[in-house]
Image (cartoon, rainbow, N blue to C red; front, side):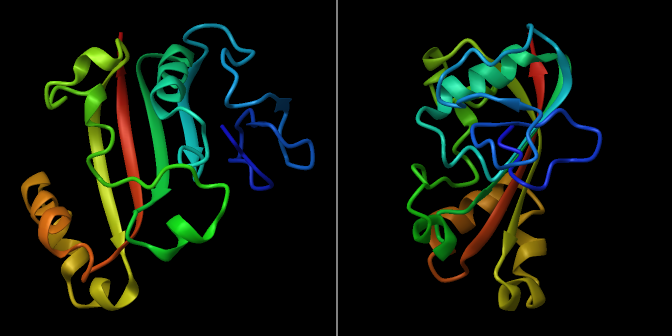
Length: 170
């Protein structure tokens, strides 16, 4: 999804820009996308989710397109990274818990959507200095350490990019 000029090898690329490597041109803000339900084993949206008009609706569409047990991979800037704010097309500034509505730990807000995912992986990359000092290793050891970092340290030990991997539940 939103493949840009660097389409993943072997993938069917979808983008709204005809000057990309897309096989299918469609507006990501206007679902449904032109594919049948459960058409894919995997959906990748690398630096896409921060650009869409409605994150929940887009995740629901990814859910529709991916078979049960399939994988959704997302990558997006952490909201403390300068790149989150320097691109005027970014609509959302997310953290490592922004997708909890779709899982078992929905913080009581699971009623926003029927699309459900099992969180398989969340990995936060940090700026180089913090990575070299071992902070990246520490905050990725557990959700508890990552939460502590998000609450108390992320404006000092700043995030760079977050990688998410979800299993689709239907």
